[in-house]
Length: 265
Ligand SMILES: Nc1ncnc2c1ncn2[C@@H]1O[C@H](COP(=O)(O)OP(=O)(O)OP(=O)(O)O)[C@@H](O)[C@H]1O
Ligand SMILES: [Mg+2]
Image (cartoon, rainbow, N blue to C red; front, side):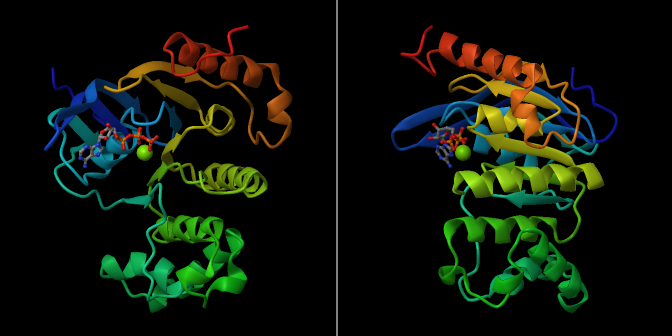
C-alpha cells in the first residue's frame, strides 16, 4: 500500500474525488489508478462528465483528492505543481494583455524576467502560427487562435510535464489536424510527459503511446490500450490497420457502456 513509483512521471493510486454541492454529493472519480511513465504521451478519452478535467486538476495540484495518492515526479502533490504547463479546456487569457504579453505571463507568474523570454515567446508564436498576432488582444482573436496562444503560453518555460484538456476542441477540423501534427513533432523533439484529454478517439489513438479509456461517472480507468504505430504518424496512420483496430476497440467499449448507442452493426 502507498508504494511510490519511485521515479518520474505521474502516479495515481486509489484516487477518489467527491464534490459537495447544495444539491448533494457527486462522486467524480472512484478509486482511480493510473501510472504515466516519464516521457510518455498518454491520452485520456471518456464521456462528458466522467471526471477527465477533475483528473487533470488533481494532477496539477489545483485541488486535493478526497482520498488516495497523487504523485508527480516522485513527490506527493500537496499544492500547485510548478514544473508543468497546462492548456485548459477553455483558453484562459488576460483581456488586458496582448498575445505576446499573455504568453510571457507564464514567466511573470514564476518570478522570471519576461524580457529574457521574449525571443522564445515569439518563436513559440511562430510555431503555432500566430507570429502576425503577437500584438493583438484576446478579443481580436478567433477561438482557435486563442487556444493556440494558450498552447504557446503552456510551453514557454519548457516544462517537463504538459497537461492538455481538450486543447483542440474548439478548433475547426483542418486546424485541429495541423495542431495534432505539430504537437506530435514537438513531442518527438522534447519527449515531455503528456497527459492529453480528448473526446476524440481518433485524436487519442493518433497522438498517444497509450490511450486510457474512462468509464462514465464515477470515472475510473476502464482500459489502457498500447498504440503501436510508428512515428511520426502523420496523415497516413489513419489508414493503418492498427489505427483502425485501436479505434474500433475503444468504440466497442463505449458501445458496451451505453456511452454510444444506436449504431450497433
Ligand atoms: N468544482 C466542482 N464542484 C462540483 N461538482 C463538480 C466540480 N467540478 C466538476 N464537478 C462534477 O464532477 C463531474 C466530473 O466533471 P469533469 O469536469 O471532471 O468532467 P469531464 O470528464 O471533464 O467532462 P467534459 O468532457 O464535459 O469536459 C461532473 O459531474 C461535474 O458536475
Ligand atoms: Mg472536462
